[in-house]
Image (tube, rainbow, N blue to C red; front, side):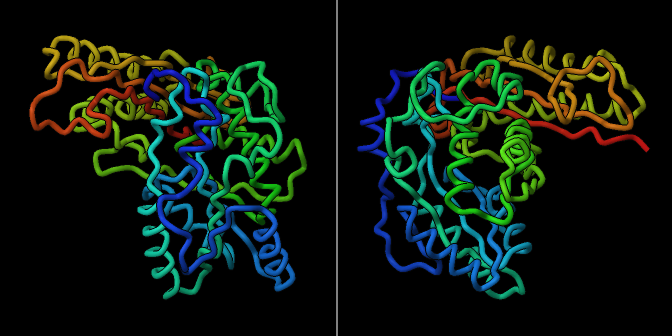
Length: 361
């Protein structure tokens, strides 16, 4: 997902990436950099019997985020949006500095959305929480080492499966920062997208196990016109890798079709997906370096919707989660004038996607 590079030190991260590029001028919402003033606003809203929906983000907002904010505004009087690139979910070999940071564009999108919401009978964006890393991690600088020091929340064994198998600290970082955000905001409802399906399962388990007083709401995966799941990292793809990257949703769709046709065994459901992946990769390998976009399949999973354990046969009364991950390799050779995406095609991009196999009638 990220370019392999020398890891950015935490001190360098604090220096380079914790201040938005624009000043905190007047907006239609309040921008908070610290916890106490936001908690005061939250108390005032509580006393006024207002409800708060929280949409956690790492910025680089796209229509997937916007759809979650619209959902939150439809279900609450006030919406809080967090924008924080969380260092603890990046491993030691993942380049934190490569994550896109688009503060000005993000704020412009949120202002435009508030104008739209202002003309409807629903809630609006009231607060943006854009904390510094020192605010979010006030004592020890957080570690990206598997056994590093720090105050962390771990949800096992869910966090060790699928994405967690190759990114061992990722869900520890996600659970930790979400626990902090939930404690800071104390929202009535929190909103996540289905695209990050394993994240939603981890967060639901955390809320249940720690008796957190919030409702987890899941919004549908938002897709581009060609079917690609929206992601902040898609800006790195460019035309060639984006076209080849559609192999993932095509493979998942083939598996979904087999299930909908009545197939229940793992082999019958996943064989078509595996064939599409193999054939697409073989085709790309047959092209010249200036034409091809190579990729690696990390996994195609057929899992229980609660435990994420792989299943040999789908229970038709329960359904399953069909998911996958691939990594688009850097382009070997680029052409003059070619759209190679942000980073000129040199940044590897991890794509994840999923489909819910619903219980059969």
